[in-house]
Length: 108
Length: 108
DNA sequence: TGTTGATTTGGCTAAAATACCAAATGTCAT
DNA sequence: ATGACATTTGGTATTTTAGCCAAATCAACA
Image 1 (cartoon, rainbow over the protein chains, first blue to last red):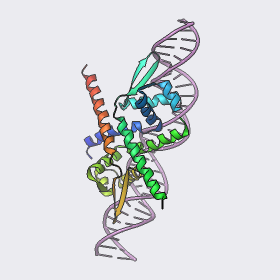
Image 2: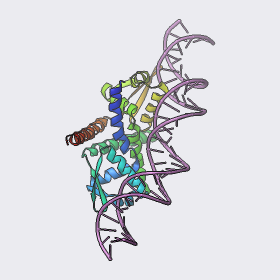
Image 3: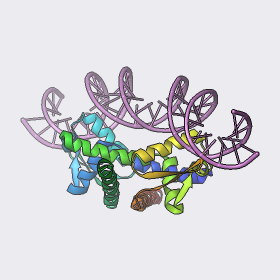
């Protein structure tokens, strides 16, 4: 794998990594459903320390998945791309496929 | 977030995590293009130690993304779900979106 | 101007992920 | 059986990630 290809896969991995955490997946899902949320709302929903949630959001932002807008003292986050739905659909397919195998395994 | 919801996002995250690495993304991409590959071929292409590649594959397998078939001394891996293409499409969208912002930024 | 509320950042510790080498395992042909 | 491959697994060192508290910023408002 030459260094250019390498770099391309690293760039892709950065985006995937940004979603590779339950709290961040939840956030993305929530923004998908609700358009936008401020840090305090997400903190409430996620249930971790606000500083932790803020860091999750910074990570999502640096991957280009979300953008933020400051309004007064609050910062609102929203998705930057709509295709994220595809991600979730695929994850669900995999989970369904895994569940099916599991059932077949138990049926013996 | 109640524990059931929590568990669901953790299960999803496991799948995303499995792809959150340049080598594993490469492998998935390669299997998408080529149907199946043995460990030695993938090792050659990825360029890491075979033991490392084997562990990457084990991780993908435990997430349910790939399945393996032993034929003789060799083990062939292939994708278990086809929807992974959606993943890549979405990643490309994000990357294109990022590139666009970058261009706009430089144009000032 | 001082206080309160929202958010980010510094500092730190604990946990998880990576990658290598060496050793073990399993397969095939000699 | 023995040797040569292909693959996985044990062990370990290094790096990265996660999460919390406390401190720093910044906006709004009394």
